[in-house]
Image 1 (cartoon, helix red, strand yellow):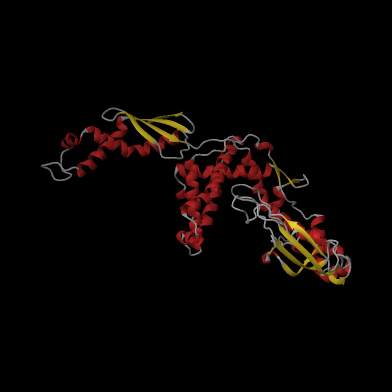
Image 2 (image 1 turned 90 degrees about the horizontal axis):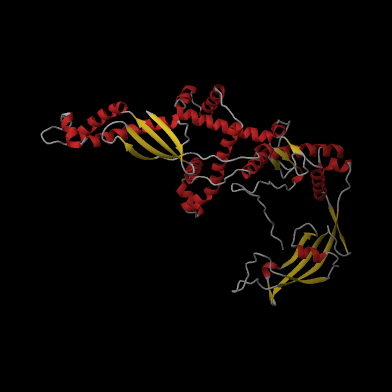
Amino acid sequence: MRSTAEKSEGNQVDLRIEIDEEELAPFIESSVRKLTKQVRIPGFRPGKAPRKVVESRIGMKAIRLEAIEESLDGFYRQAVLDNDLDVIEPPRVRIDEGEESGNIAVMATVSVRPQVKVEGYDSLVVNLPIHVYGTEEDITLAIERMREQQAETTEVTRPAQVGDQVTVDIEVTQQGEPQEEDSAVDLGFRVGKGEVSADVDEAIVGLGIGESKEFERKPTEGDTEADAEGESGPTSQVKVTLKAVREVILPELNDEFAADVSEFATLAELKDDLKKSFDNMRRAQGRQLYPDYVISAFLEIVEPKTVPDSLVKEEVNSQIHTFGHRLDAQGMSLGQYLDMTGMSQNALLMQFQQGALQSVLLDLALRSLADALAIEISTSDVDEELVRISQSLNEEITETRKRYSTIEAEKSLKAELRKSKAADWLMENAVVLDPDGMPVSFEELKEPTEQETISDPGDEEISDAEPITENSGANLDSDQQA
């Protein structure tokens, strides 16, 4: 058997396979035996007709076509290996020569995994949105919240100031009609802390007890009230009346305060402990975000960003299959999940679509990076991975080796290892900067610390910032304001 591969359009390859007649002979014998049992010939019991009678009845062309069909899978697989083709779809096959006699020539048009360009991979700069250590601002904010928790209030008669605890009545009308859902009686809040809408916060500053202030509130973007012409809804009239003011008195920041709110005797010790806690928390956050941001930046330089539909469909099906297994582990079927969420199967497919696109693009990009880095996989690399797989599956290493004993399986395993090494290289060599432009090392983030925790010292609100890609996005929750 001989084969040649010639690149065609796009990611298509024309694979010509030539099979000698002698190589086809065993398959012709097998086809004759098979057809002899299937064909009924008058005067002979099933399977007992002489070969020449069978050949005369069926025709040599039909026998050879049966033999070619039976043998082609093996010859095709060997041709793919001989030409080192990474095929991603079943081939389109036609027989060019040898249907009736002589040597056979088959043309298989195959789709191979496309290659993408990753120019600039060696000068990748990534901006991480968080510090990977506790900052002075972190510590200051945490201590201020502790002071707030220990604060006392005293009633005052002066006008309201930022930071005061106030009690107000809010009356909202539209075109003279009261808007009960937007109004409030004896509403308490801290001025300037974002606990109410900005217009109310602004109106209350400088207002004396018993005094009122009126202003107009225009509809905001996204307001559900709009007229039939699609114009914004009516303007609201808002009246805010100040009923009480209490000044918030924070405890003095000293060693006594530190002893009251913590196990530490001095303020310096409290700050040191907060610094350690923030360091651990920020490092843990950085360890989670670092790979996502590096990969996101890496995908930005990949060209082209289009991928074959067949790979996307395969990835979508794989993700849904994995998702189904997770549901099974929770005692729920995919159908029950769809019923519970009111989601259609098509909607679920669309939900996985973008993630699949990114996964396929990353797969292609890492393969190209592995080529650019000339990454080789050694026998020891394969052995270590087989041991890891056997341990993860809790099976004997001999069983694992058996499953990966074919040329195709070993080739696939090596491809995964090459991608893994390429990703490791990317993590180690990308220039990652924190918000201050200081470099961040992934190796340092991986180093263990005495005590790591995701808990937030002082209950600080820290955004789990994520790259806004198809797979993830910033999650910003807004509090409803009066």
